[in-house]
Image 1 (cartoon, rainbow, N blue to C red):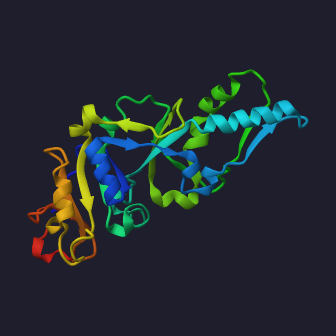
Image 2 (image 1 turned 90 degrees about the vertical axis):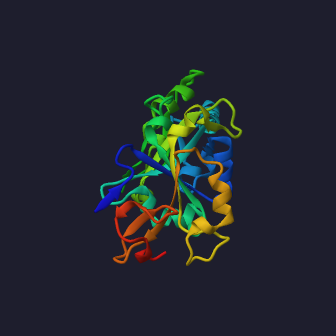
Length: 264
């Protein structure tokens, strides 16, 4: 029998290392990342151009305003489900963002995370073979034009990536802030409903052939989660399929089999 604890909500998955997970759970907020620090160099260092008949000092000034405006945009990335794979099944995400499996995957109910966001600044990334990272803006000297232009082009600027990144199955939240310092998505008022479960593969303080629930680090983390939030370990069944189970050995996602048959 197949069991799926995610069937009653739309999950989004945030992969992070253990230390960052502790900070998120303790503060009930997620830090926005700066666009200049994206893992995709095409997003971090975009070619910027101004459509102009001739190179003028005004065009250079507008180019600098465009560069400065982009610094006000920050983002938070999640993985989401596709038709073929659930977000938590993405091995590359565990490897690249969750400390090679020693980190954490936080599973959120998308509805509660985005309930205070408007419809323009979140959504799934679209991947294209012909992705062009350059931003080409008309040469218009009106003082507020640059800010309005970036806002009007938000979908094409911030929600497009090269097809090379499609394995991330990324769902992204983008916000414009007046401050270019660290900013946060505060989930305190809806935290108990938004955070559904915390997933592990390994824990650094126990052997990899043991379940993570014996780890003191996981025990400490468990004290920070909401009452109804599940702590689950991702493992493989005898056929090599993914399975999620709790500390009692109950299968919460995957084909239901005896706990002793699970190969951690």
